[in-house]
Image (cartoon, rainbow, N blue to C red; front, side, top):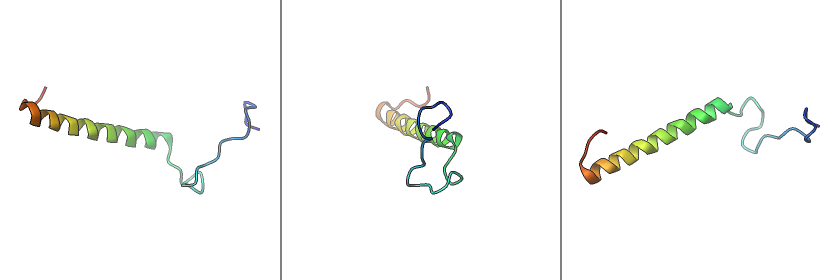
Length: 56
C-alpha cells in the first residue's frame, strides 16, 4: 500500500521501462510551455497577415 493508504503506488506507462527513462515533471512542463509559445506565435503571424498591423 502507498504511504497515505490509498492503494499501491502508480505504475509507469508503456512508453518508459524504468523510472530513470521517464521525464521529470519539470521537463514535461517546459515542453508544454514551448509548445504553447510556438502556437501563440503562429496566431500572432496569422493576425498580422489578416489586419496588417505589426506589434502590439
